[in-house]
Image 1 (spheres, rainbow, N blue to C red):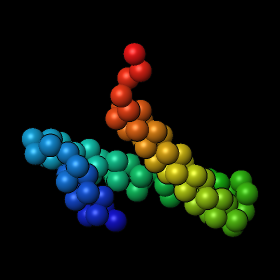
Image 2: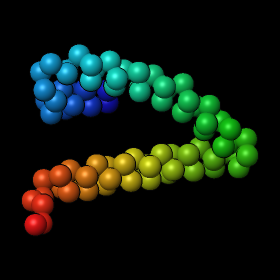
Image 3: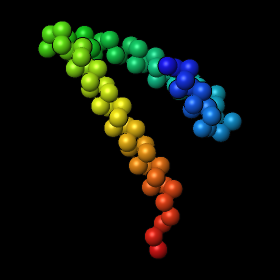
Length: 83
């Protein structure tokens, strides 16, 4: 997944920022790899084995909300300002 996200991000970014974007994505994926299992196991301790599925559902909801916010922000920036 990292490769697809990285290549898509670089295609959308300017050439000068591709190295910085790759670095940021690497750090974010690393943080997710560290915190994800920790948070999932904490939720499993509180809820039981179904906590893993709850964690996955919460992660998907957060991802969908983030994508919606980004699209709304992009559409608002592209819309002409009303005078």
